[in-house]
Length: 212
Image (cartoon, rainbow, N blue to C red):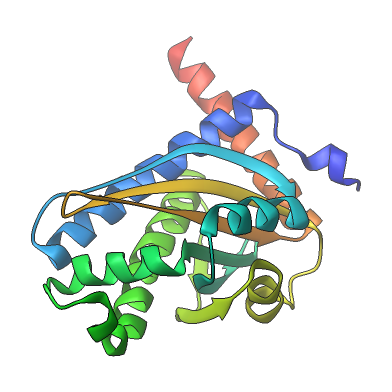
């Protein structure tokens, strides 16, 4: 099996983006209860790319350190999922989630728990939605929070997942009138990516039959 053989075509990417957006819509509803007001989430694009390319894009945009909430998932397709933010953006997100007007430097003690819960909600919603619609089951580990640069985060969080390809998703948050952007990264080995591609193909075929 080669990397080229499991890359998603445009139709498959569009279908996967649709599934992820359903998931983040559900995550937004859960976060709305946490922050007490409307939360908007969207994933405007999805792409399969090399690790180095993904982390290059993230680090170029971060302007400093990164924070990642990561969870492992197991099932028909397995791997490691990360929700990644530039560090300053993560502090803004925490302040919105904990509903406090304290200065950013005074809420660092609250950051770990708030980030873990936010990551748990977003990653679980995305992965559970993808799995449910594709008629699969996934088991998720507990969320963990890490800091560092892209290569270090990926090595620390997902070093046990082989392969150089990952699913890269840009995610946009609007919370408390603040626009906070981040990324969802899903690292899977080639067999898992091949399974995901097959399941998405079956999902597209099912939709085509329904519309015929």
